[in-house]
Length: 509
Image (tube, rainbow, N blue to C red; front, side):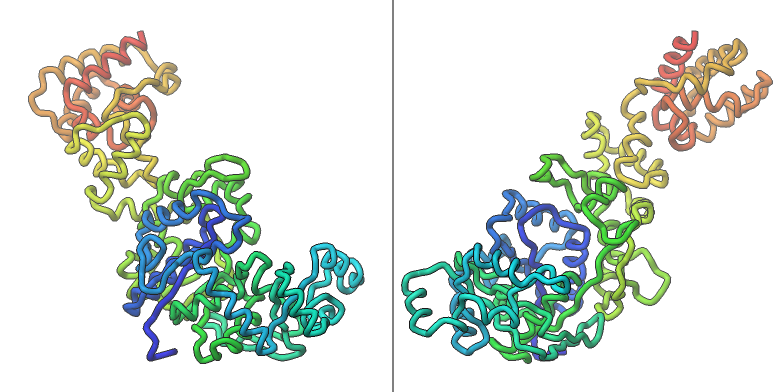
């Protein structure tokens, strides 16, 4: 480890859409590592591909990180000493590095038109190589500064002829690095094509920008998805050619998150009820709102907990971790190199555990919002707190609070009559009429006493309590759900309980 370097890590999303689960996990691992080492967590927007830019995507990324509580120390919004933090605003920086590579013989100007590139792909196509790439076998037959006379190259450049700058990949060299998760990883340079480093519009590609920016921002460790492993040899050579390998950050390539049938795709998101995004996002292609974890009723605490253990554990059986515990216990070396399978039912289990574990005050505002979304505006916070305490054990998602608790604030609009009608009779009608009188005369409105009185009355009427409890529940809540029925009656209060019994009796007649 670079002992002298301050820990500085970065997350560098492209503003091209919603944040994928894997993206938020990358943020989390960066954040935990930085906090554990009293380092800095930087967010850099990689917007060099302007054709894929989606309006609103950047704001979405920031609100997502705010919701999860994983906010960066430096970013386009938070500022910092290493800005600007948007690559498009750093455009002027990259050309000098690309030119330096050409000057030192590590890169070259390529003047090929789109038509010429198309022709190359046709001409060099074989059964063994159905999709030829611009590489060491092809470059000698293309229009570039390696094949053209120096005077011709100068003339083309002076005339501002459209061109790109490509890396000149060496033939048959082995390039290696030590991955913090995978250990020693090696590549043969012959299988990698001459990637474009600077595009015709002067914008860098990811390959050049990521190396230059990581250097200028003094990044000490770079954690990214394993889909970037094939690009590693290009990046290692750029480090070697521009800044020296000693300057390179330590790398870790994180495993993919898998769905039920392999890689977790956006289609899985729709098909299996996996909200692949961490918050709602309107898909630019379909214009449909994707419902995210936040809308489905996940707590941010549960969300980062379940993400942390998707591919990591601390070597014990512990599954529930607070953010503080994760900062203390996380280690990149214990991240598994194999893909981790995302299971939505398990995700809900984490959320249920967190709902049970949080104090009422920690749930109040979010539950209030759930009711508000259902058109129930809470004015009595004391009652809300009692309701949360009573039903939270039964809720897997925050949205469950609506079903489990709405009837405390609003009389049922529909009743499960099929659960009552078939077994309804005159004896039960008489029982409930008398129950109303008893309740009206009662001065002691406590669940335990209500239950005792109810059962004594049932015995006097010679009806099993079980046959009366279901109709009583349906009178109060409308269906076969909710907490202990006498706890419900106590919270509703005498007047409301009596009114609801009377209402259903009238319907049954």
